[in-house]
Structure formats: C-alpha cells, structure tokens
Amino acid sequence: METVVLVKQVPSTELDKIPIDQDMKFKTDDMIMNPYCEMALEEALRIRETHRGSITVISVGNQNAEDAVRTGLAMGADHGILIITDRPDQLWIAKILARELKQIPFDLILAGDRSIDQDSSIVGPALADLLDIPSITQVVGIKIFDSSIQCIRSVDRGTDRVEASLPVLCTATRGLNEPRCLSLKGIMKSKKMKIKKREVFYSQDIPKSKIVSLKYRPERKSGRIIEGDSAAEKAEELIRALTIEAKVIKI
Amino acid sequence: MKVFVITEHFNSKFKKSTFEALSKARRFADLIQSSVTAIVIRSKIENFLQEVGKYGAHKVVFAEVSDSAQYDSNIYTTIIAEIIQKEKQAIIVASATTQGREICARLCARIDASIAMNCLNIRESDQGNLVCKKEMCGGKIISEIELTGNFKIIGLRPGAAEITVANTDLQIEKRAFKVGKPRLKLISKNVNKAEIDLASADYIVSGGAGMGRDDFSLLTKLASLLNGAVGASRSAVDRGWRPFSDQVGQTGKTVSPDLYIACGISGAVQHLAGMIGSKVIVAINKDPDAPIFRVADYGIVGDLFEIVPEIIRDIEKKISV
Image 1 (cartoon, one colour):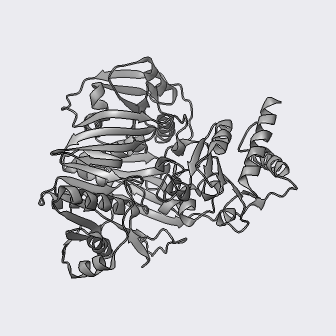
Image 2: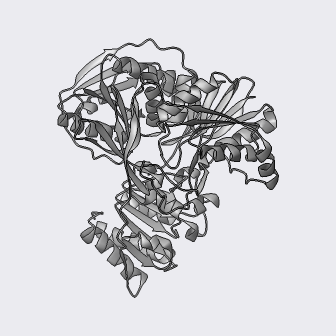
C-alpha cells in the first residue's frame, strides 16, 4: 500500500491577529501543520500498520513548507518531498502535484478537507481530477480492501458509505481520528532524514485566482451584560432586546 | 458572459443553498446584463424543475443520468464541463456545500478556471474584473480574490446570500450526455434527523463544556422554538456529548447565523473562529471573565440551566398570546 499525504503549513490557530506583510502574505514564525493534514497523515500511519507499504508526505509552498514535511516525517512518514513555488494559487499547486505524482506509484492519496487559513477545499479534488481518479471528500471512516476502499463521508445531511476501486484521493475531516503527538524519538529521527527538494517557477499561462486584499475583521463592539434580580428577569430582558433592539427574532 | 448555476437537490427538492446561488447569480447577471442558466442533473425530469425560474434562472439545462451516477462527482464534472465549454467565457456559481465544493474543485481543474470558494459576495472591479469576498483563518481575516481567465468559478458560502424571487419565464432544454460508468458506488445513506442543517441555519443554539453532560435537550428545545439548529464547542464534542458534525469552530463548521446563542462556552480563539461572523451573539456563562463575553452583543452571567428554561418559557408565553 503506497500512500501519499498532502501537507500544508498554516498560521497557528492560537494567533488572534496574524501578521500580514506588504505582499499580502501571512508573516509569522508561529506556524503549525494544518490540523486537517494531520488527520490525513494519522490515517495513513494507521493504514500502514495493517497494510504495510510506505508513506510519502509532500508539500508545495514557500520555504516554510519544509517544516510541514519535517513534521510529517517526525510523525512517521517514510519519505518527504518539498516543492517550492512562487505562486500560491490552488489550481497551480494542484498542477504541480499532479506532475509530481505521475512519477511516483501510489494507491491512495490523503489530503486535509481544507486548510484552516484559506478555507477553500480546492487542491485535493482538483488534483484527483488531473490524475483522473475518484475523490471522496470529508471522510470520517476508511476501510481498505484488496484493491478497493470503503469510506464513510460526512455530507450536509448525515453520512454516506461509498466504495471505489483504488487509486483514490480522500480528504480527511474531524471525526476520522485523533492525530498522535510528536515523539522526541520521531523528531530526532526526522532530522536525519533527507527531503527531496525542487523548485518550480510559474510558467504556464493558467487563469489566476489572486488575493487582492487581506484585512482584519473589524472588532466586534463589546455588547452589554444583561442585569436582573432573577433568571426570569434576565431572560425576559434578553428576549425584549433580541426582538425590539436587535430585531433578530420575531415573536 | 453567461452565468451558470450548478444546482443541488435532496429528496426531490432543491436545497435552500441552491436558491441562494440562483438568487445571487441572477442579481449579478442583471448587473452585468447577462442571463442565468441553471444546470440540473437528475434521473428524471420533474415538476420542481420550474422552481429554478422562480429564483432567477432564464434557462435550465436538464441532464438525465441514472440514479447510481448521482453520487459520482467525476460524472457531474464531465457533464457540467461539456455544457460550459460550449461557451467562450462563463461565470459558474454554486453553493459551497460538501458536494458543491468537490464539483467546483474538480471543474476548475477540468476546464482551467479561476476559482474562489466559500464566498460571501461578488462584485465587479473598476477594471471590470470579478472580485470575490471571503473569510480566511476562521473569519479572523476578510479577503478579496480577483478571478481572471475565460472561466470563473464561485462557490458561495451556504447562508451568505439572500434569496430573492425573480419569477422568470423558464426555458427548458433536456439533453443527453455520454458519461462513463460511475466509479463511486453508494452503499448506504444515513440521514440526520435534524431538519435544519447547521451550516445554513438562521438560528443556532450551541453548548460547551458548561453543559456538563450529554443531555442537550434543553438546547434542542430552544433551537426548535427558534426554528434553528444545535451546535457544540470542541470541548463538548471531545467529551463525546455531541457528534463531530455539530462542532462549530476552527476544526469544525464555520457558521454565520442571524443569532448565535452560546451556552456554557468559554470562547476559545478556535471556537470564535467558527462563529465570529454571526449577526448577533448571545453568551450565557457562569464565569463573568469568560472570553466569549468580549464578542457577545448580549451576555448573561448565570447558570444556563436556570436561564435557558426561562428563555424558553418567555418565548412560549409570547407565542401563545
């Protein structure tokens, strides 16, 4: 079972205000592996326990992306690939990945359902389309058979159980697993591992999806604490405020 | 440039998010003096097809496929690509639901389109380019994305666009498509009992660690009175009180209802990331220093198990009058 896991480095979720530079890029050293990519990698590690084979983690991005690959190796992946590029456009990234993956044998590609910074869910299914393989998104359960896969996927109104022949691309979401913590042993081991690095500069003329503005959300005005002598009084005042002041409910 | 809308249906009904996409597409098409074509993929043509005209479509292309093909995003993509590639240029609008996101992403690769997902709004820039507004980093950042090229795909965040009625005379075109065998097979389906989908609910009542146990019936009751849905914080989900699909926050759903009532939720940055775009936020918490009060429009310091029953009683009293 050869598994490829797509990983991405994102600004830490703990950050209240993520610093932005003049080129409209996030500029912070406080970065983490995208939590959904962690779930994807965790699942790959679990699959390897029963089905053997090897795991390759791959990231496309700027120099920062090396940390995501390194974290992937520390979690237990066998191989790491880093592709540095000058354009963060999702279709472009999917094209770079497709070109790379046409050169490596794989049975399964696992990706995060979305990255918590861009919140787009584009690269995974776009890559599946370029490789002409099925995509199964928002996966919360995976079972591998000889040459096929069964997944439980979360849909807007519940869950579906679906089946497809391998190779397949799955995107991981909350509920699939609880990713392991990094071990010191894993971190030490990963430091000695070699990452295959390449640079790809934007050349092809493909349509662009370009960020033209990034702004912090205006702070919410702090509201008011509803006072009252009893729970009933507070509740009544709240309903009055919601119906008459905020006009958000109609009774 | 024609505007296309990818529709979605469930149990022989269009989804509410499809009406949002149609309405938004129509308003934008009017602005750029264009027309709206809806794409419907189903096993048989039915009366409810007319509804796309009500919300603004001028034309509908009906693609007939077998029931088994209806779960394969690859087949959908093939059909939509074939319809759209008859045009030299097009704007494609869909709702960024689970299915919508997957199809939009595959389509962007298939037809070489620019794309923006989970958009809140669309506008035309001074240079005549299409600019989409969206949230990033769980709503901490608002960004604008400019789309270029001949084909542009916009995934609208469910619940973000207003539904407007246009009552347009609908031209129906039924077309057959040659598609391969589905590569994805549906084995079983498990449908939530909840009538209102959390991601597109107008009212959300959420519970956190302060609930103390898995009994959310109090919140369910308030939510159903408001015609809304129940959500949960990561703490409540991690404790096994609620399913993962109920989680609101950075690693859960991003919601922006008219009213968000947070009960017993302290308000970690990661939770705020999922609900900060709500129109009105109410917080009920015992701890007066809980960070949730800093973003709440209305806060009640107190025991939710005393406050919420009073809120329910007050609403019931007013309804019965």
